Image (cartoon, rainbow, N blue to C red; front, side):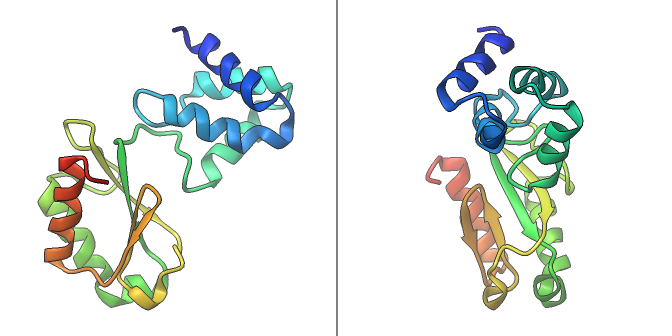
Length: 157
């Protein structure tokens, strides 16, 4: 299916008013092959909703659940708020990078997992914490990190 047709279908289903923008962006991203919002997608959405591209891009680049860069099917967001950062945050980043063989902002070669920073995820009492798609994991150590990655690779998440 052509990108324009796919996005038109989503807009028809959700509605073509500006107040539906975030819902449309989330839906388009979920159906994207690389789990992100391409510039072409954003241009089409702006045209279909009759709103400026700058507004669509601003929303897409502001919210951490949206991305304008290619992502893996599973997005591991490592909290870099003060509690997580101070309590082993850098160690957690190093462990993920070591185990996955990628750096922050990259995607595994199989396209399954991407690593990125995010602001507070509301789990300060469980620092250091991460969010994988919509699930939060806290009090992380190497063993818990291996369990999360193993669950992802087995398709259990």
